[in-house]
Image (spheres, rainbow, N blue to C red):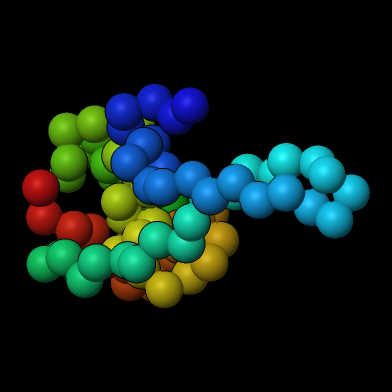
Length: 90
């Protein structure tokens, strides 16, 4: 259902039947780990995929950076110059 690098790759799926008899599947909520992470000061041109490639060796792992921070919208992590975000250690 999801690629191996997706944050949802190994997340359980629950299926329920609605009152009208329709089957609906949904991803279970994930408990986010608190991995060891290093601070990064946001500079002009930062993007999560580029930071993931530089620090984690894989641009598709940008969701690891999003999970290590408390912002709900990932793009907001690099939206303000000089803000600090946390980059998990590989």
